[in-house]
Amino acid sequence: MSATGITLEDLVAELRDRGQRATTARRAVLAEILAAGDTHLSAEDLARRIQRQHPAIHLSTVYRTLDALTEAGLIAVARFRDQPVTYHLAVDVHHHALCTNCGATINLPPGALDPLRRRLRRDHGFRADPRHLTIPGVCERCAR
Figure: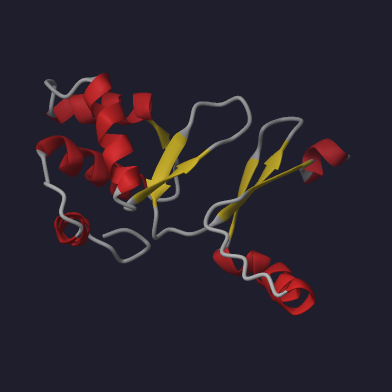
């Protein structure tokens, strides 16, 4: 089980509830993303990990699987500057502060943006629903 309390079986059941098949590749990708916890994995990272147990699952299959799982709403994409796109569970809502100088990333809890959400609603009637934001800036070490 991960920190989110979700199991692979939960994710597979959700996949099936959304009318999708639970193929070996989909199960393998979900298992690796779940096992990674707070670590965001690129497609290449996932392929390397998956190929240890499933050598027949190639990088191209991992990419297609990631597209399908993203479309199904089970995983989310994270982009950090010029780094490869990474993936995490969609239910793991959190944000990042990214140092534009050294590339350090700080995971922020989902509630970190609640004051901004409340202000947008109060001042503009806008109901923000941020799922995964990256906020650029300079970390404490680089600011010294």
